[in-house]
Length: 195
Image (tube, rainbow, N blue to C red; front, side, top):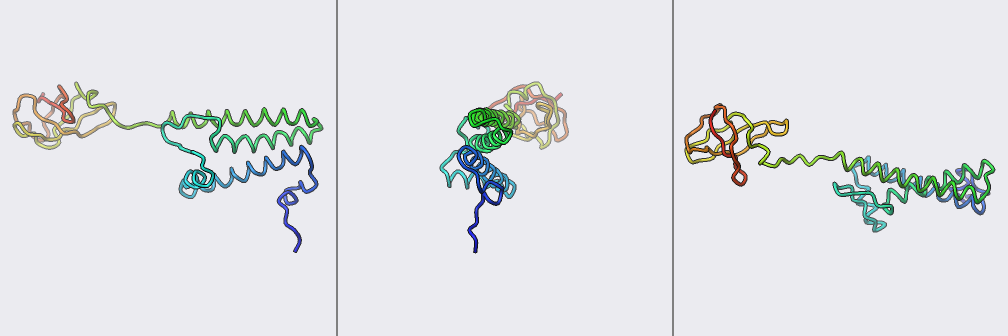
C-alpha cells in the first residue's frame, strides 16, 4: 500500500520552504474550521471538545468579548495566512511579499472574526425586566387580589405582556378582570390600585 500524504491529495506533494509553510497553515486552519463548524452543527459540542482537548477557552457567553488569541481567531489567522500567502506566492510575488500578504490577511481575518463575535454578543438580549419599570403601567387582574392578600395581574412592560404577583394599595379586594394601575413595587410584588 502506497504512503498516504495529505499534501499529495491537495496538490502540494512537491512543496518546499515557504510554499510548504503556507500550505500547512492553510490545511491546519481549514481542517480545524471544518471540524469546528461540523461540531457546532451537531449540537454545539465544539466548545467542550476544543476547550478540553486544547485547554483553550472558547466561551461564547454574553461577556465573550473579542480577544486576539481565541480559538476562532487562531483558526482564522492560520487559514487566511496560508491562503493569502499561497495566492501571492503562486502569482510570482516572491517569498517576502507573500509572507507580508499572508500576515496581513491573517491579522485582518482575526480582526474580522473578533468583530463578528462582538456583533453576536451585542445582539443578545437579557429578557429580564426591572420591576420598577412597571410603575405607571395599566393592566388587568389575572387572579383575584384578596384584601391584604396577594393575587396576580397582567401588565404591559417594555412592550410585552407580563404577569406579576400583586397586592392592593389600600387593602381592598380587587376582582379578576378588574382594570388596575401599578403604583409601587415592594420586593417582587407590584402594588396596584383599581382604576
